[in-house]
Picture 1 (cartoon, rainbow, N blue to C red):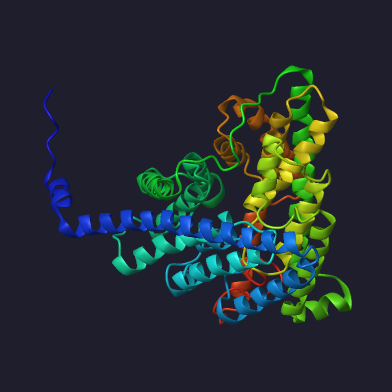
Picture 2 (cartoon, rainbow, N blue to C red):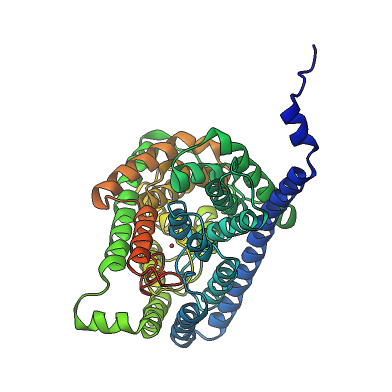
Length: 456
């Protein structure tokens, strides 16, 4: 068999030092995303452990620490890192619709990426119910965007493609789920898959994931479960969890978007909107009270509680799912940096545990996994991302079909309650507010964390 000969243009490309330097820089950027995700993970975990150590010694400590922390983070964010509010996914999506130039660069600046990581960790140090995965999307997009702006990639590799690839690589590195990173980019960020940029996306995801795995080790985010859906009660759980998770997720999204658009009603609401730092402190007080009611279980990302439920390793309050939902909502509207990815999965685990108690013949682990996918799909209305990410995080391919059915049903139920996907709606609000105030250097209105004015 004769090997195909390269034409002149192909030979030039293979021998071009300039092109190879750009490739090496791109690969280095992908490695940087993996390392940044690892650093973020270590910082977040250390912050949560330090907070937990404090509350183990002083039960009422959150009543002081949590309001002060949320108020302080909100103040620093507004003063030095405007645009770092919320999860970062809506901001990354919004930049895909912006014209290339300074406007896009302000949203995806390395300064904001650093601020987002730092302030999310500080929020977790104070007990905020936020996640690091959404912020990692903005961080990943910012890293590859900075490469594009500084190295001036040729037009065949659009700036938009690098933003999508950076966001996908962030998800893959944060969760150790490369397939979910790719699906997230297609379903949630670009909602399209262009053949000419597919190699860029895949390369970024693979390299970032490998870099993170090399440092952290190959782990499953919520441990491993081999539970399966079987019998009448098992398949009944698929139906009920899809309905329950979709309903709860849709209500969460609707409440968050309603607040993001209009804020709190009445004169008191207008006063708090005019004093966002005070509002963040009050949110911290509400969060502290929820934490005391839940025996400190609703603080942080929800990683330990989800794993405990899945592995039945320790007791978690029966009302954990509902309280975690409220804690995440309060943390989100406070205006501090932080996402809803892992807290949503934790809420779903809690709701699944509740349903498992009503279906004694169904495998509890299977029902909890269904709950994670159902509630997450109900919140983000991205069913493919939901079942892929849960399947990868629990290393349970046997649950593929039940997870697919549950996610699709939950998404359909959620759309009947909240018509627009939460990230898309927040991205549109972000763009609309920037157009209303073109002189603003970053996100406006401090009260909605993922929206431009309040910061998910």
